[in-house]
Picture 1 (cartoon, helix red, strand yellow):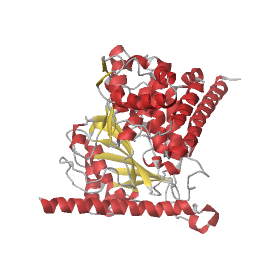
Picture 2 (spheres, helix red, strand yellow; picture 1 turned 135 degrees about the vertical axis):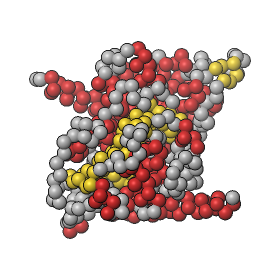
Picture 3 (spheres, helix red, strand yellow; picture 1 turned 60 degrees about the vertical axis):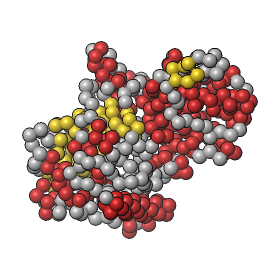
Length: 504
């Protein structure tokens, strides 16, 4: 048996063991139905408990004040345990507190405070807390540590996202897509990598994983470079407090101690984010999160469209020569007016070298058709004419609609990744496949003649003629709802903008 076979078997075995542990944890959600707990609340609840247990298993327990650790929770029983748990969540969510038992002032580390900030439990019955504690304790934690606690937690987040009733898919980007994007952009050790719509941290974790793989888990780097990677290499922002909590937990379990802030990137807080070498992101789309129109004062083109606003942040937030890969819905590619001006500004300031038209069915709740834009910020002294041609790969037309029947895997991106090439700046040698192929080149002049409309397709879509290839009715309904949600969001934001204008 050769080394490749051994490695493949090892990877498969690793995945199976992680999957088994995730399945056991996820099965516990059924225990909580009597408490009326939602899927998202369950994952948040598990985050609190898993943090305490994992801290015990990894030696990080020293950061948690004595008397308020996993063993202390485990020692309690019945209603006393539930009461203690409620106090624990409150105490660990503040920088310091007075310990009732010892009357001593306890200091809580900032990372612990961030994870438990404004924490509360949805559990109402002591018996359900007991079941969670007992089942978490029964896990083979030795094997879990061997597999990687970060992978285990990522698996739990993915399970939550794949459950449509949880509603979590709107902030969870499919891991095969993340891996494809990160692999093509090739983040390097020493670069500042940002996700301004961080979600649960998938892009940052994948970038860190690839950098560690290329540097022998950072051991190839000197001490200062290792410190930078662990504490300064990654940044960004997440709007939703509960999602930010999951993000911090995910980063911590992957050995990342960088500051990814809680806040709104489209508010003045977003202006404070540092210029980045690499931006990898999937801004929210399809639902209105947080409310209100963007309030950034530094944008050249104020807009109520949040995706267009995020696009402005991204290309303005790159250092000269910095590169980005961003997931955006179709409307960003064709919207007239401000949309056209923002696309023109993008193509002036950056080299927009590649667009990937993604297939349908990738995201929950959306049905919204999406793309990945790959671009590089031009030199500091050149803010005009950086885009001379754009390559487009159509992975959507006459392709399967992905979902439970056809799960998306990294192998589905193989052909596109070959066409893209090894150069992260899109400089690899490329060949146009012509009107019958999926890979085409369009000059800046041709795009200008289309009114800077980048929603370009050329293949004949014959899938509607084959009944067996039609998406499920629920997927068709989801797509319709996705478009309606985007439209309603824009109408609401425009109404708010007009109201603000009238009031001023």
